[in-house]
Amino acid sequence: MEAPVVQLDTTMGPVTVELYYKHSPKTVKNFLALAKSGYYDGTVFHRIIRDFMIQGGDPSGTGRGGESSFGGKFEDEITRELKHTGAGILSMANAGPNTNGSQFFITLGPTPWLDGKHTVFGRVASGMGVIKRLGNVQTDTNDKPRTEVRILRARPL
Image 1 (cartoon, rainbow, N blue to C red):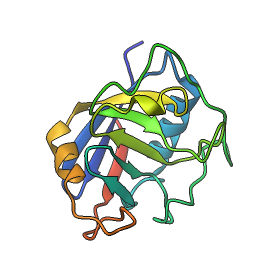
Image 2 (image 1 turned 180 degrees about the vertical axis):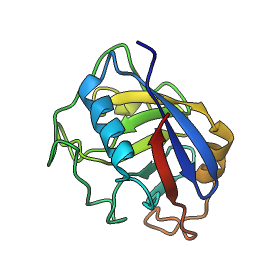
Image 3 (image 1 turned 135 degrees about the horizontal axis):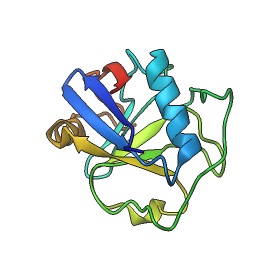
């Protein structure tokens, strides 16, 4: 099976992510279902930390909302083979073990302290320049972007 791909059309340009179905099947199924349903359309990247990560996927825009396509939260799919080795890693945001919902983040550099704590389920296949520009957006003291950056549309390709 060819790796599933989702395109995120953002206000700063398009980003395409390749999903790791073999290692994280439930997480990939969730992300694909949310993208296909339009769940991510119009949502903001609510948290950006320079040289660390950009976070989105919360329809409330607060970092405290969002639900999985299964309803509520679901378990981690952590594997030793997939690590936060550099920029462009797609991983689930969570509030502790087995609390995955709709929120995700994309790394802006190596983040090894996240290994074993967050499910890696894909990588940026194209649009890394857009990700880098997103990572340079000015933020307030709570890491919230001063200028709103949105996912206009997310669709499986």
